[in-house]
Image 1 (cartoon, rainbow, N blue to C red):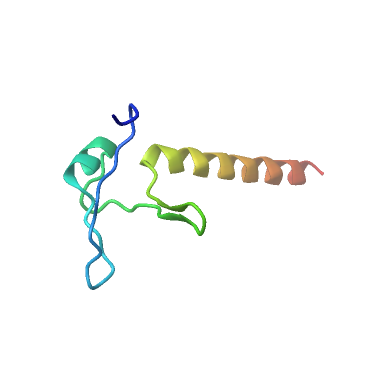
Image 2: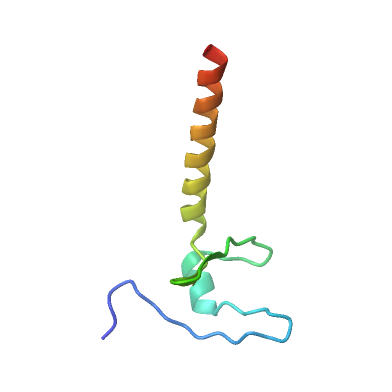
Length: 76
């Protein structure tokens, strides 16, 4: 029995280092041809392809913090 909301797929790495994301995973996460994905890597934990919403949230936080810093510096 698998944990709810958890999935596992297998992929094969081609001679050019490419993988095919299984159709079920592409549909589940809304990946479409031409999409750019963010590949995260950790030597101990492995690699991850987070859903778009995860890195959109991350980038928003980073840029919001940077904009706040710039605004504070302008006020000095």
